[in-house]
Image 1 (cartoon, rainbow over the protein chains, first blue to last red):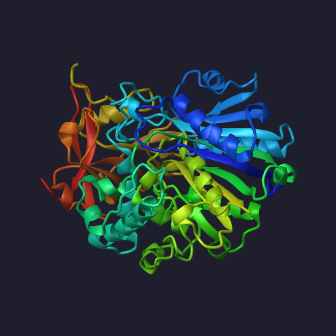
Image 2 (image 1 turned 120 degrees about the vertical axis):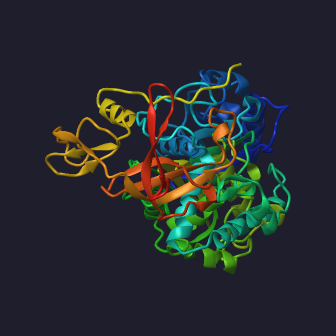
Image 3 (image 1 turned 120 degrees about the horizontal axis):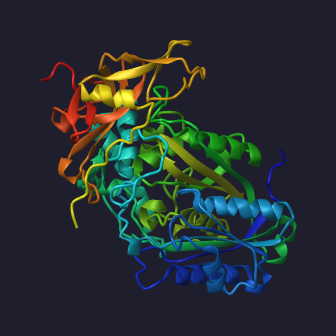
Amino acid sequence: MESIKDKVAIVGTGCTKFGENWDLSLEDMIIDAVYEAYEDAGIGPEDVQAVWFGSYWSGIPAPSQPLATALKLDYKPVTRLENMCATASDALRQAAYAVAAGVCDIALVIGAEKLKDSGYSGLPTDDIAMGNVSTAINTFRSRNFTAPGHFAMMATSYFNKYGLSPEAGKEMLAKIMVKNHHNGTMSPKAHFQKEITVEQVLKAPIIAWPLGLLDCCGVSDGAAAAILVRGDMARNFRPDPVYIKACQIAVGPQEGYMNPRHDWTMVKETYRAGIAAYAEAGIKDPRREISMAEVHDCFSITEAVIYEDLQFTRRGGAREEIEAGTFELHGELPVNMDGGLKCFGHPIGATGLRMVYELCKQIQGKAGPRQIKNPGLGLAHNLGGTPGGATVSVIIVGP
Amino acid sequence: MSAPEKPAPPVNYWTKPYWNAANEGKLIIQRCLDCQKHIFYPRICCPFCFSDRIEWVPASGKGRVYTYTVVRSNAPSAFIGDMPFVIAIVRLEEGVQMLTNIVGCDPDEVRCEMPVEVTFERLNENFVLPKFKPAGSE
């Protein structure tokens, strides 16, 4: 099996302001993100040969054709895809494979989601509040269960396994959120750009114990885009292209809710996607070879466990690394330099490409006040689903 | 707009014995006659050895909380009135696991590893749901 390493490069990226974009339609956001990417790559719509478009809910049931209309594409192939919260990452993976295969030289990838108008709060279960009944096969899963509830159960079992009191555990998680909000103050495109304190996180209303309001990411609108070209063509577009080193997805076959062997203090899909991506990129020591990461901090506990699953630290090591500041902006391995989902919110189908946008800006030295020193390999971790069964993408890029 | 009702479990031929037993205040699970392993949730064949020789057996109804959360906020739904409520993963003595509610105690009293036992709550005229309460409590 061949590696995709260096066969495909990102030569342009675009990203809208994430937030409550009441005055922008889905098409408006797509046009803004795509034209920023065109400009960044120095190309126009006539240069695009194929398009991959990720969205979870928005514009369905006919998203491909309206996209072609909005972008005035000249009868180009458009594939619309969905892979839960990892949707945009999978769109990038599909486009990268097409370019690597030589079936197109210049591909456009888009992730976009318009959630706020839908009334979606992040809390409804899939059936009751949405007014329809789940067609999921496993009818023995609970029906009164929120997304924060799923991840809260990971926090409870993590505290129990590592002997953390609820107070100590919640404080550990709060520090992750404080870090991400600090980074978010330097992100003009983030939904939330304010500092928060540990005390505010600890005193926030509980959503699903032990997770409070400020342990949870927000619901936002947004779009992001990238232009992919053949690796050997990349320097014709710009002197500083970003090369794809790995893109891997791991989908869990486990039924964590029913399987007594399932360990709720880890997300095995993250661990496995990480291993596969490290192998593809030729990375042996991720802690030392990865210089920065954008990870899926949908909830505070998710980011803590990601540190361990991606082998940035040992099992149970998250707390001491947080205390040491390892993952802060100017720490040893900065994580969520742009503020992450915590500050950008989570327009489901756009998030993965927003992460890649940040990695490219860092590598190209264009991250402004949040610029890290000597950026090398960057990792984007995008998680769909829940700890009981997830779809996880790990993308690695570098100069 | 009328208030939403809590959803009733879908019933099919391989889950019917489970719900019939629950209606009589009994918790039953499946066991494979070939590999002897206990099985939950109900299946048409053994998920371990694919044998279709499976039987229903009584469960002790005793287990321990593996992990849990206390839901204190939710979107409008039939469950709003129940808040705060506990969702937990309970590992039964027989080695199977259930996603369930812990009832019969203050939600703040629930802990990982806490011993619990089955209790039954009526959902509507057709269904009784097995749930769990602290072991030895009323």
